[in-house]
Length: 29
Image (cartoon, rainbow, N blue to C red):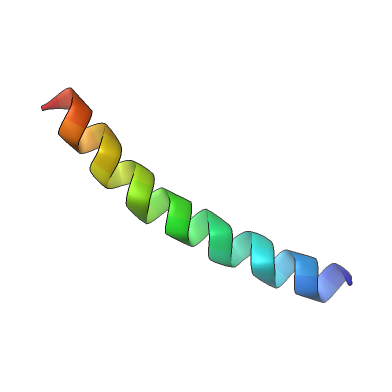
């Protein structure tokens, strides 16, 4: 469970970072 949760967490973090970056850039601009 630990490894799966960690992998899922990393995947979500990477996705959210990419998506949020575009959202924040769009809002800030």
